[in-house]
Length: 179
View 1 (cartoon, one colour):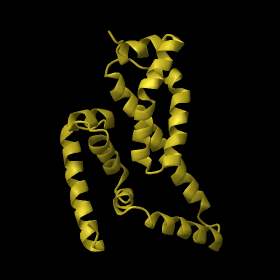
View 2 (cartoon, rainbow, N blue to C red):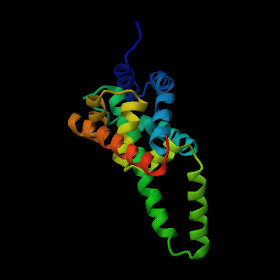
View 3 (tube, rainbow, N blue to C red):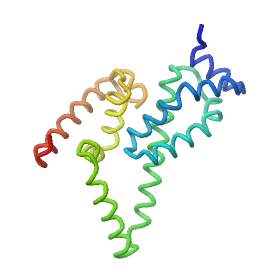
């Protein structure tokens, strides 16, 4: 009989290296996949996944087993992405005022993003809470209730966000003549 994630997490929190290694092998792809969907960047997702895995042993010591391990793990990933977004926003604000060179650099970055697949680009224009919701419900195939637990919002809020995503994507597609 296979050991549950919850039992492995408890053992890993107690210092069991084999349990920790098994947890990582089970969930590494899940962590990376969610990080990629939330950031839209393979490089950022790889960096975040490595950071999350490196810090996971310490975080497990604070896991209280009040929710399923995977729910808790998704929350860890979502929090890591939010932290990264805050850091990027801070760096972006600091970079403003560097003159024409910085403006030209940011314009080049934006032009490169515009060349990506329409849907991926359109998703990046959604507010972070909508992107997070779509990544969990569609990308991770969670129910709205499960996504609500990970995001810390009600199931009704998740349902509203999904409706809002559809409405916004339709409007973008009509405005741009996209499929």
